[in-house]
Image 1 (cartoon, one colour):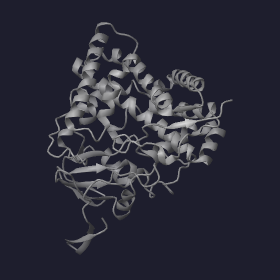
Image 2 (cartoon, helix red, strand yellow):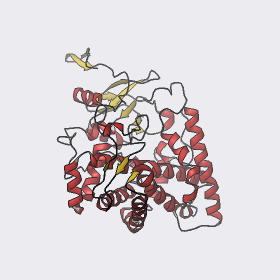
Image 3 (spheres, one colour):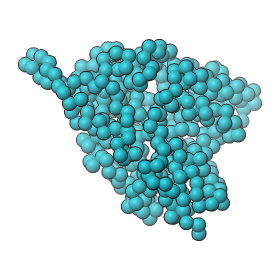
Image 4 (tube, one colour):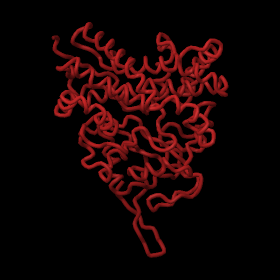
Length: 413
């Protein structure tokens, strides 16, 4: 990765880094919270450099904070699925179809704008804060259940998964009792080991479930987001697409942040003690954990026209893989980036993306984390891992990083 080759310019020969031959995805570096070590080395050489994709496409890899934010905010870069080359091995030769109706993450303006406008007012900071009381109720219920079951638990199963799962189900109007019908499909959707056909089948199953639900809501609306959306101009197919997208994202990402965030805090006793002692640290702590852990990575964009970024010419049709992990550990933006510091002003991180495609549910995720993490630490002052940190199973082959389980224990009071 460190070899260079010479290119000629009008002012004479210059050196450029050699192409990256594969996106660095192995996070197993000794510290379960750090991105692949290779990303930092690549970013130090050049925050934007050439990368060879598994399908042979010669595109780019962005690892610098400035470069990633610039590309995410620039409408000259497309998010349309059918234009993207993917850095994930095993999908070579797979023709990516255009986004299904309602799946606005794979669309550009004006289609993307239409969906976002319908949803943005329903995900405002104020509206999400109104859900605070319900999040507090759910966390208390699950903490009570943990305490009653005894001083040992898998935090993922007992707490990290059910709290955000129940919240997104209630928000959308999805019966929580039906969750077994789609949670397995959501896991397949984010599993990098799953084939393209398996992922497509999983998404189709989720979409079919949500479409049936949307049809029922249209006939008999209730007090929830899906019913609310039936009063718009969205078709049943579009409602299914929007609902599937929100359901899948709401089930998996926050759950992994709560579990992995707890693991990180238990591994950093000074930071853990600070959060326990200072409740006002909850909001900055969540931002720092989002920056430090960055569970969703990477994203891909394709240039619609020639664009110069960081002095490099990205030509029309070339894809850029954006590493949020690397950008959030960029020392040019965050001093001592590999250190977890809950008092850090971590604003400007890209854990939720950036620009027009920034995560729609970010305010709900913040509310859930700001309540769930301090509540857990208050309820169990002696909370600790029940296994050696090296024995915690990680979700390494997954689009959403995290832990598969987190065995914890505590002293009964």
